[in-house]
Amino acid sequence: KNEVEQSPQNLTAQEGEFITINCSYSVGISALHWLQQHPGGGIVSLFMLSSGKKKHGRLIATINIQEKHSSLHITASHPRDSAVYICAVRFSRGAQKLVFGQGTRLTINP
Amino acid sequence: EPEVTQTPSHQVTQMGQEVILRCVPISNHLYFYWYRQILGQKVEFLVSFYNNEISEKSEIFDDQFSVERPDGSNFTLKIRSTKLEDSAMYFCASSEEVGLGAFFGQGTRLTVV
Image 1 (cartoon, one colour):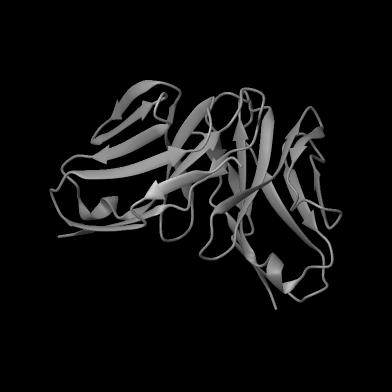
Image 2 (cartoon, each protein chain N blue to C red):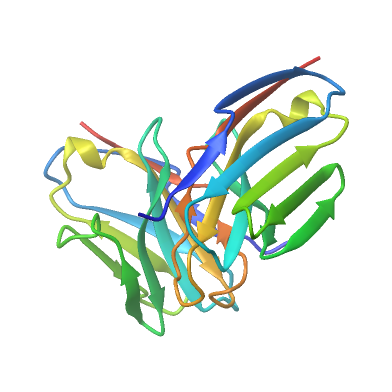
């Protein structure tokens, strides 16, 4: 079964800390997405990766295809980064659907 | 910045009624999707739509559900004979090509009572 697992499920940190959220998947993929979901429920796409590393501001996403693993890092975390971060994958080149992880709830305290 | 727009933001309906959830995808996008998220659970794929027909659907997307692109701008999800377990947040998404990132709407929270 094609599955996506995230860890940790919940993460609380102090402002300024370096944050790492992990995602692993069961079989080879064509693309991996990192998404952010705010308390109101809306989903924002942060990154789409198929290899290597991407950076946008304080956010960095990496993927290791051989190990079937991706990480999302947040540097100099801020309370406004508090949200649910979700990993989602497209399991094959022809597949149109995304399979989602369960999300990591991040809380950054001031 | 272009965005996917969903209406309404919140809908309450009686069990057994039909609801239509509406979405306006980004104008040059060709692929359209519906996902749902039951409270406390993962986001789940429902259906994808391309070239005026369903291109992929999940086991959840049974005869109770249908999608339509009635006028070239709107993309709708119809749920017939709603059940309590249909209560969820429903997300519309669109993408320019299947291999590119999808843009999500803000969601419609459906509550069936």
